[in-house]
Image 1 (cartoon, helix red, strand yellow):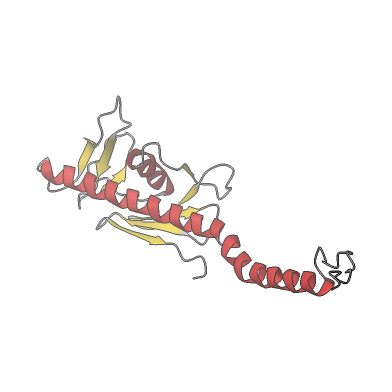
Image 2 (tube, rainbow, N blue to C red):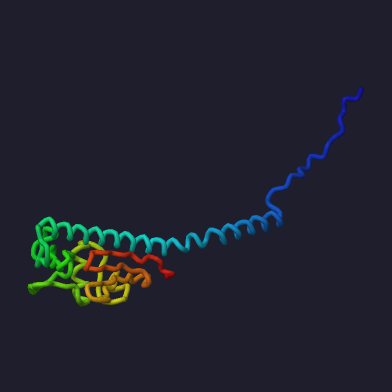
Length: 186
């Protein structure tokens, strides 16, 4: 008996690496994923701006409500001059309330019936209610302030978000209504 086995060729025939077709398929799959996912990441900046305006509008609305409740709790039924909303030194935490009991302005002189009737009134109400909040000015330049105050009608202001100008916060001092326009496509 011959115990000899035929000798095999010991050369390794195993391949290492990827074929050109495999690489092309992977690149195509990555391209498809990028096309689907990239718009989601691009909109994150705009989504953050929308969330910022909504949060600021909510804080502004809450501050308006708290000021009105303070006015009512103090027993007022008409205009109030220099009502201390926050305990601050000086007039920083005081507001002049209109005949309906909503913030109208924050600055001297005394007015028997304060009204929100110019852009300076809009500018004075914002920082009193939103202490340490976003900055406001009469400029639409996003480098000078976060919001631009705009007097639009008697007793009404709009605060335009300077980073995305079609977004705004509306305030009506006749009824305390605060609306947030956070749809930049409207």
